[in-house]
Amino acid sequence: MRLLVCGGAGFIGSTFVRQRVREFGDEVVVLDKLTYAGREENLKDVADDPGFRFVHGAIEDARAVAAAMEGSRPVEAVVNFAAETHVDRSIAEPDAFVKTHALGTYVLLEAARERSVRYVQVSTDEVYGSIEEGSFTEESPLRPSSPYSATKTGADLLVQSYFHTFGLEALICRGSNNYGPYQYPEKLIPLMILNALHGDALPVYGDGMQVRNWIHATDFARAIGHVLEHGEPGEVYNAGGPDECPNMEVVRRIVQYAGAEESLIEHVTDRPGHDRRYSLSSQKARALGWEPRVRFAEGLEQTVAWYRANRWWWEPIRSGDYRAYYERQYGRALA
Ligand code: NAD
Ligand code: DAU
Image 1 (cartoon, rainbow, N blue to C red):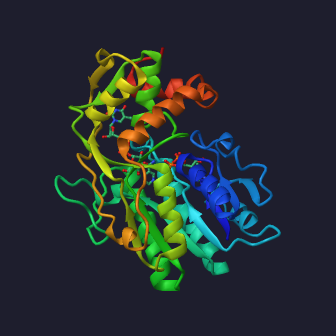
Image 2: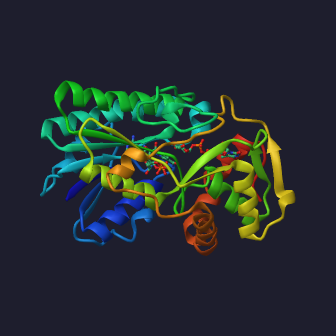
Image 3: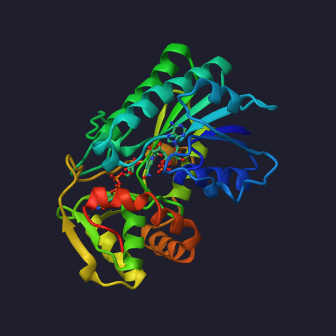
């Protein structure tokens, strides 16, 4: 298949691209704005593949989208990962979240509609809000709590409107919390791994008893591929991980795998509007033949080992703009 993958230079997008090129033999065009979270280095394993092309541009720029979709061989489907993805940044500066998720998704949908190509929107469990017990299904009401999740919800509704109104072959795949190699260290797991390896404090928000449903990025990428190939147009598919875990337990395991001291753990001011628990029922995706393969304990230990072995990847981030972000967010400097 010839795919346009928007946001393919980010964490999950690049995992998806590696998988589709290597395991499925797809031809892939990546369109990416290269924000702080997008890096061409993430695509170095496929950069020399004859079917691979990189276009630097934003999804809200209709000309960049057209250039990426046309080329010598027009694409047959669009998979949209492009997004601002960090909840804390959406609280501090929501502007880019509104532009990318609302305007960007609209521009991409228009481009897909004009060319009648299949469209998959990559979405999140955060659109359902928090759940104390049980799990959200695709029929659960949408109750987003942060500017991140509210704008992602808006994008999902727009995608559904293009199916209902224009008959676009549009599908949505909603994932739970991803982890694995190549994740930008603003997120809980890579932040705690790198801080533990450097002897920096480990900042746990509030009581640390918030629960997340962890899925390895290779499993989420496979779910998105499955929805792309086998999903019904107009439908939503949840893809949750096999295990859930409270944040304190995640951090303690990282301390153990990194060989650090538990005394580094510090409770800091809670995130405003912090969702307590996320949980997805993935029965519908499982009925399509997908299931997650990586258990959290094993995937987390491998992830710690990957960060330990791949200094080339995180060193430029940790010594660059990320330092200033960290100081603003946590009120202290990194070692
Ligand atoms: P990421 O922040 O690592 O990557 C986002 C990518 O999108 C970057 O390469 C960035 O440069 C690009 N981008 C941002 N704005 C753009 C724009 N306007 N035009 C073009 N490119 C742009 O994100 P991620 O964690 O890989 O998440 C990818 C997708 O998966 C997002 O849509 C996110 O909402 C969704 N998702 C993430 C998780 C998670 O736990 N990380 C879970 C479920 C769903
Ligand atoms: O659930 C899917 C979502 O998961 C994705 O849609 C988002 O793009 C992604 O960022 C993620 O959102 P979370 O807010 O759940 O992830 P984050 O890694 O920021 O935080 C995970 C939990 O850890 C959350 O309860 C907040 C807590 N946390 C996070 C950070 C960065 C801390 O306690 N300390 C921290 O320093």
